[in-house]
Length: 328
Image (cartoon, rainbow, N blue to C red; front, side):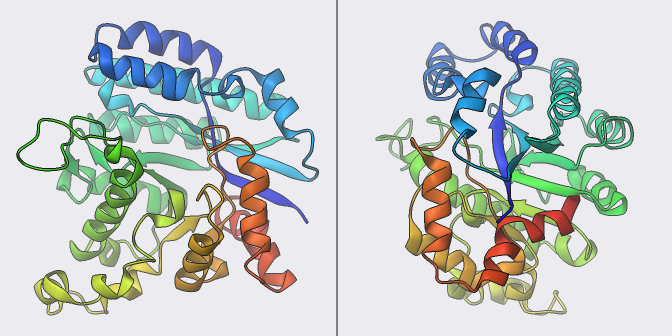
């Protein structure tokens, strides 16, 4: 059964070299150490194509959509730097897709979200000239929520082009767990902070009316859309619902179900089943977070999907059909 991995990460070599030089003076030494140890050097196949090919040898009829790994470009420096890095990354990812069409079906463009005009320019370049399948955005832009008016033109442009938005969580140790502390402890900023970030970003897009204003916007949320499918009943009631029930013409969950979610849940079959139950197989895409998940993440994700007991038609929908409908 054909499989399209809709959320496979990469740091192309030229981009990575330029990125690391830039980060040395742009972020704290602790944050740089995290990126180097937890991302850049986590698995050689993030940059080394030979290592990637070895990782993929066991998987027949399998191809990837390339999505740039963290950090968000707006963390790297002022808008001019972020725009330069976006152009370098997108040109290099496009070149990889052209050279290896059997393994890479396309890429999601990187954007400099700290400059709306530069982001729009990069969307036009990436989609019209490089044939990007869409673009990646993060769940916040240096602490600014995605329903801020400055991002409305970006969502409008993606919708008008019929291209897909990839949503990736972002949060770091400086986002403290409790008001009495100065930073997050025990890595909670990542383990539960990222799922919260994803759910918060999606919720803001729903409750603010962004999804109502853009009914044809296509968005894939990483890691199974975070907390959304697991806490959907809470999202349909309570203070958030009361605040918007007279403003939105449809119930909030109708908008949440318009999102798409991937299956990158690190070998947690019960979580994948919950995602499938909430979104339905036609709004779930096969995605693994490769190579930034645990060892054997592709195999584990396949096992999670196969354990859900879906009919072959629905399995095919998750593995490839929805991705082909969305962006191929």
